[in-house]
Length: 297
Picture 1 (cartoon, rainbow, N blue to C red):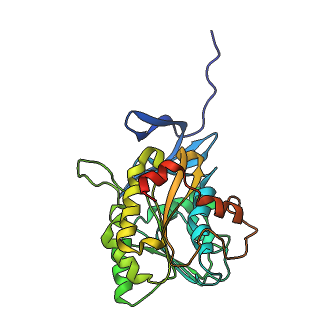
Picture 2: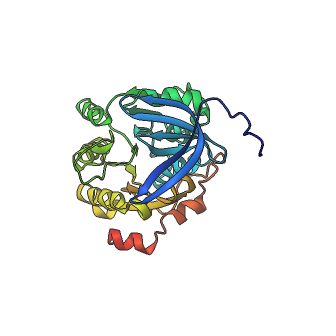
């Protein structure tokens, strides 16, 4: 008879399946170390390959092993698409995991970074379970965290006549269900109405939004691109990509950039990145043919 299994770690060990598409799932085996059911369903899994993994509403948000790819692509491509020194004030809609702010604060020229996230639990969990996502100086005076609905906060900023040079929309994916049921709190941040407010808030700046993995959820990329083209001058709308292994392939990002030739980086290359480089920046704008056919570009 075989020996018994060794005693495992504390917590519940789970075989978890995340739906990537109809009849297709990603499967993880790990130890559940945190569960929370508040305004969003949150749980943290420890996996021997990916490290700690954060799931929101049963969908993977990031892993310790490769979150740097997602966050560096989200931040450095739009920053470096503008002339050096033009990005000083930044708004992050979502981003309570601090990953985007960590990358932004690597630039000494950036004077202000405001995170507006609706879920107060996310920053607390990151500080406890994912300290690697925090900025080098977590008390950097340039950083401000606001727990609020980004949609309503943008309205408030407009009333206060505030403006930004860069807006980063770092959220969960929107709901794409045909039932009309909306679960994701980020859903309104993909809307035409929200982007019209951002155009007022950031009239001469850069706006970037993550929009999923097109191979398994192409409608998010296509609809986000359509929204950008309705709101911003079409010649200022671009799509770029980064391969995030835990997402199962290339993640798409849609960007509004009023500056010419965003494909060419314009700032000095930072020494303390692990994915982003000027070479990667240029390559990020090389889109697969099937993406271009879907976007009609």
